[in-house]
Length: 466
Image 1 (cartoon, rainbow, N blue to C red):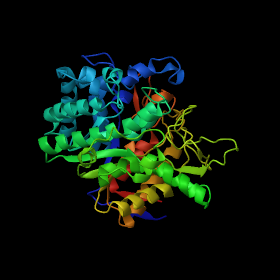
Image 2 (image 1 turned 90 degrees about the horizontal axis):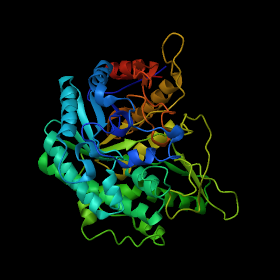
Image 3 (image 1 turned 60 degrees about the vertical axis):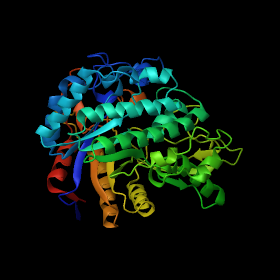
């Protein structure tokens, strides 16, 4: 058995999202979000589950912060609910909502834990969706105002501000395939959403730079490792096209200050991109202290031959509408197991591959693993414990992949396990459990899984065995 050591400066944390854990959906002045509307629409979520109660974190946050402290974590990544602090997405802010996050941040600081606040983790105020949602430019401008309000209220105590979580999902799953809120299936709108999410990031990032220059600024992207099924030129082009939609549509403007020319050409039949105004790309490219990377599995594609049965095993939910706008003639192929409960393949080497690519393509840009983890069918055993050996194996191998990337010179500065708690897993409701802490949804009892004990030992020693 070999051991790989992480330095004391390496930041260990865990992550959650507001709608997935908070509950209290109608308390203390919180307004509705697109996920409230979506989850209450029959047929949208498994078993009709909603985030109305979730893990009841809104009432149990001191206990949950105690768990973070007991785990020995140096940081906690949480998201702020836009409709809780600014119901309707514009106008006055809700003092009760701001106070909740002020108490949360103060509680973290009292426990010696760095607050890492995500401004947007998919819970757009419903009123803004009614006015057009992310395909409308005005939503980005409202986001800038929202950012100014929360940074002004909390910025002196927040260590890191993350503007967006996974804008790929917000744009393509929310407006392309419709498997996420708001459930629209409009290809041109999905691409407009890509741009206005990028613009919102740039505008909010500049707010952080102006109001709290000492805070670190980040964004979190779910970047894809895309491989071709063969060495053919057609499959190589399929890889290029999906990489443009999945990765470079965000990395290009955010880090390089321009959209990739091939992305614009590939999607010209869908939109002329006239929603990109002069100066937008410069606004988007606000310098980042750290780029957040979310990784779970890899992707295998091939060019459709025009007559074979189609394959849409991209892992992003079932829909007759593709999230891959302008690339409907690309097939997504099933990959060999093992799989998580999400049906996602387990591929740690691809994680290293992704990080090495980022280090090569964007030298000098520090990275942070802001989400990585796995859902499995956890069972409370007769001894009262949750023996989630497969999750421990997943985490060990993926954290090992991070160590491998660091050994190759990639500047990865920390790792946040997804997730601290079992929670509302979007369209899958409460059927999928990602937490290292088990939640009994009937009693709201928290119980550490074996993976939590394993993670605490890793955090304490910085030494990964095996």
